[in-house]
Length: 330
Image 1 (cartoon, helix red, strand yellow):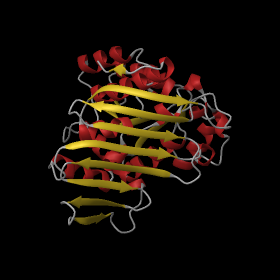
Image 2 (image 1 turned 180 degrees about the vertical axis):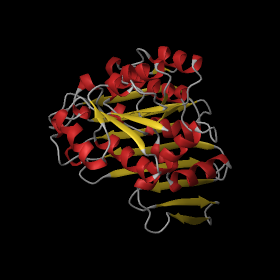
Image 3 (image 1 turned 90 degrees about the vertical axis):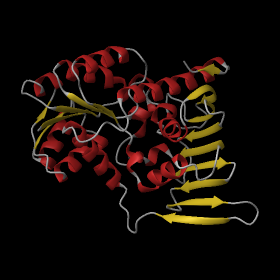
Image 4 (image 1 turned 135 degrees about the horizontal axis):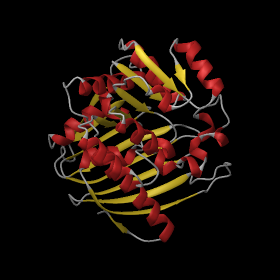
């Protein structure tokens, strides 16, 4: 199996390392930056090309699209037209332009397309999903989640002002960086309406929104909230679900799912993460899942249609903030 990694930044290198650990030996990198090509060649002992067309000159089974968001669709379309299966990092893109073209190409060529969603492979997220699907807390009436981390701490070895998160033309911004839209709909189903306030609120030198507050109305009737920011000095990621018969909550610092069942005299049950759990494990399992999809052993946990729906929801939140209005999801 020959796999091309199109974009050799931090996430591209993570996938390279994990694919090698999964015994994929025919790997090729692609990156326009000469210094990065040299570094990746030296680190992983693989060929690294300057362009995707150069890499695709040899028959290729799959392409990992790991460049900045603004380049996802052009790369994915070129790879799809060459008959390659696709792993596209989230978000699918920064606009809907070209997305329907990609969907048609993928369908016509019967391609496997997986959109990155690494937290779906985390044991705590799988536990929350199982509890919700079983109806453990009854009908969910509301939910909320939060992601916040100081942007300069994300990749401290590089200037955050030159990273894609800080730049509009590369598809950056805390809304597009967010996993939370995809995960909340995975947990609770589709959204019918969204309202959002977002903007560049802090003194960070970025062109993009660094703070967002989002309200969601789900088709089930539940109401949800998402808080996102690039400014919190203490990394935060958490989820809470409130049902008619209980509560589920998870916090990345607590490293456990907590379940409350019953009334005033109810009780908490704690589901701890496996001892010593390495966060890279979810990325390994994500890559393993994609390889299983290529071999016909699984279907993508997040397919192209779901990736498009998550992007559409993010863009609706952006429109809500820009126009000061509630947006219906169609």
